Image 1 (cartoon, one colour):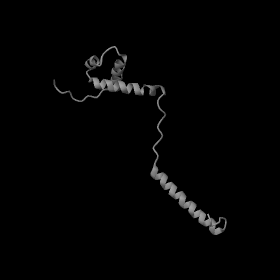
Image 2 (cartoon, helix red, strand yellow):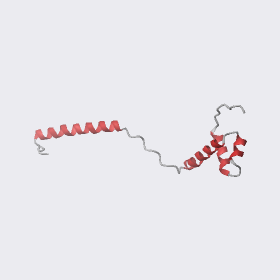
Image 3 (cartoon, one colour):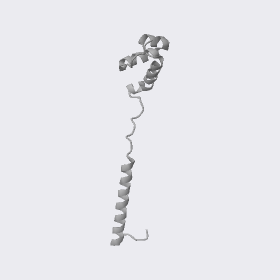
Length: 101
């Protein structure tokens, strides 16, 4: 048997195969022969369909929060600390704040 070249399947084809597998009336081997794909591929598409089906109806997980830029946050903390120290020194010089803090 000659080795087959890599194929790309459309989303419609994948959904059709996965739905046929979810139906349960045919075995994976029968579906693999009918659609000319490997049984492991059918299993993977079936798993993906079952995991993502709720997303179609808005029942999926909440959207992930955007990643936090720790470098920018640390820079902001440093800037605010410097400003607070400067203002504290200015208030002490003016006499509005005691130096015992």
